[in-house]
Image 1 (cartoon, rainbow, N blue to C red):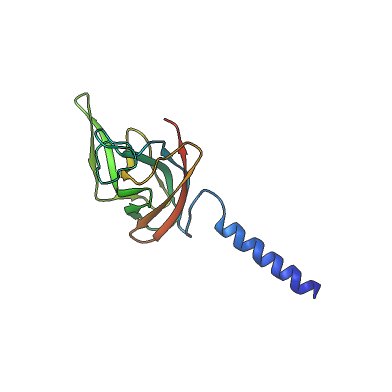
Image 2: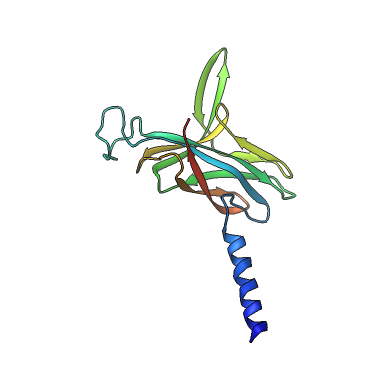
Length: 159
């Protein structure tokens, strides 16, 4: 009976370890330091709580994506219940002017990483479904070409 309880306790501990933590992971893809910039639903011309408008109701998500695999992978899209839409973007400076544009995918080299950060690659969360308050968590589901879906909890931080 004692042996059975020890096996059960060890199995439960392993399951908790596999499910816990802020970082998301698969065998090859690991997500570190995922965070979302705090923001409110209030748009430029709408009332707070009115999610039918998309103007001004957005924020960005950042993280480090490591590819421990032997083949490159690509982040294709991101989904979250915190926004009506989520897009992959890249900020660039050209002739002293900053611009931001959507990208089809973000490449993660084999044995390397891709850093999503302010001023570079990032995820835009558009049409927020709720206020994102510092200290809360937001679930993001990242869809990779080879690794498939990876879920991660991102901490909401003040700018």
